Length: 125
Image 1 (cartoon, rainbow, N blue to C red):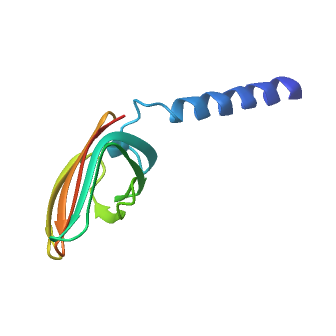
Image 2: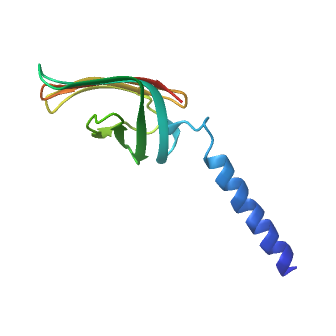
Image 3: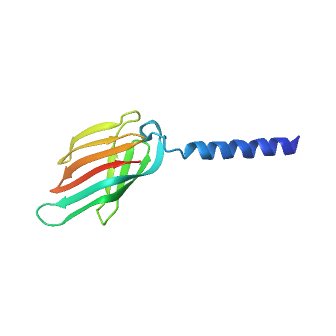
């Protein structure tokens, strides 16, 4: 009987692990999410520094209502974006920032400006 319970427990843990790593996992429905989106990324810092890549990536980490976007290709991260659970689109007008972030299980679109710096992403997963 003890062996049966151990086997069923391990099977349940394995099933939970495989189902939580799905590419169909929508970040707006979860309190904890980590995923990578690939596509076009750009960054501009006023008239100076400019970085762009058509084969870049954005690693998204979400804890609670706060998203962190870590860009590839030497583009600075965009951290502390707040969206309530179940909300996949947000327009931001605060702290001198202006932007739009749209995220789903398959797409990520970012157009965000703050302090003369602009981040852009058009990516899919």
